[in-house]
Image 1 (cartoon, helix red, strand yellow):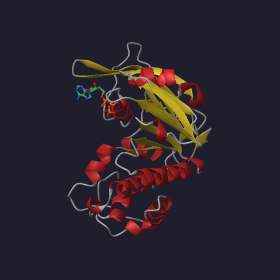
Image 2: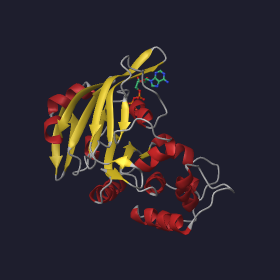
Image 3: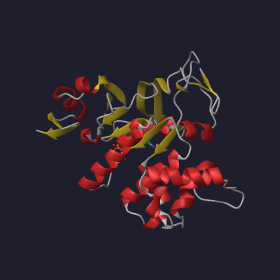
Amino acid sequence: MLDSTHAIDTAAPLLEIHRASVMRGEQLILDQFSLRLATGQHTAILGANGSGKSTLIRLIARQLYPLARGDGTPVIRVFGRERWSVSQLRSLIGIVSPALQLDYTSDAPLEVFDAVVSGFFAARGLGLDHQITPPMRERAHAALAQMDASPLIGREMASLSTGEARRVLIARALVHRPRALLLDEPCAGLDPASRRRFLESLRQLARQGTTLLLVTHHVEEILPEIEHVLLLREGRLLQEGRKTEVLTDAALSAAFGMRMQVGRRGDYYSAEVL
Ligand SMILES: Nc1ncnc2c1ncn2[C@@H]1O[C@H](COP(=O)(O)OP(=O)(O)OP(=O)(O)O)[C@@H](O)[C@H]1O
């Protein structure tokens, strides 16, 4: 089925990674990694420090390239297609990472609304050649409201708290109404109450139809809506499947290299080192 706004094949998986290997220098960082994400299949990728999570995100964001395969078959496809421009890709999969946050909260002046609306131009802020149309303005306001970030309009990005800046950057990614949001360590730096409030706003997005791909070290951040979990270890897929099958003491202990015990608190999971 073709979607007229993006000319995409909506019957194809949203994201397919087929046996991707990535080298950095002499080191193989991702080793034959595969992932298949259907629209609506909220997924968590869990792994210890150095397991390859950021490398995977950089691969999806096209900031790193996989080793070509001898048979020429595509390693990454989005809605069944290998080639997309970076701006087309952003309008299908929004990405929010700590690296992006660092860039947007640096000292170079940038006002919150400008940061969000400039998402339409894939630019860090607004330039003289950027023509903001009324629908763009409206969409930027709606995305800020969706993330409870409207009161921040007028503030400088550099003046925001970690959690506030993250909400604004998610709003920026949402201006395109992306099919999926890839969130790298979305709760890093948040206190426990802010973390829970933030997770609840992500749940709203998931319920409203944005497919979430969450990359994290923390089992506690796996939203109830996420049913599909991948465990990464040393650049390889250790285990993949339904949350109830993957979040076990044995699997987490293997992923993190230490004895761990999984617990449940209401709709969320928890894990502690024994
Ligand atoms: N530019 C690079 N050159 C060489 N090795 C690298 C480079 N970038 C990352 N690595 C190595 O690749 C491995 C995976 O790193 P990556 O940052 O993807 O892990 P991660 O799971 O995101 O870790 P963390 O949770 O600490 O952010 C690590 O062993 C790291 O040292």
